[in-house]
Image (cartoon, rainbow, N blue to C red; front, side, top):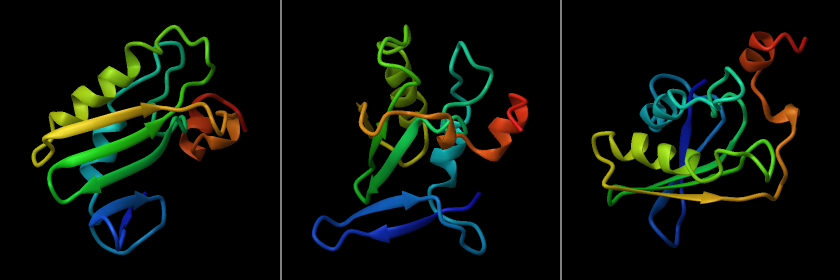
Length: 123
């Protein structure tokens, strides 16, 4: 999947969205990093699982990520956002990654990618 960045006119930030573009697109390295993080109870990475809601990258080396978990009582609520922060801050050009854990909208299986559904035998 490729990504497009659309500038926010007032803040100078860019948002990485899931729309197809041609050629190599910005944000691919962030998504690749997120795909290296797995939910410990489900053998699928958190990006394809649909836990990442928003990725906003500023021109100053800051990345803001809104994410959720499969359930509010998930035992990795304390550790998974910190893992996301660690892998994204490990990327060249990223100085700070702020991760916000949100519950609205609630996660559902419909947020999963086709690849994740295939891997879990959900077709």
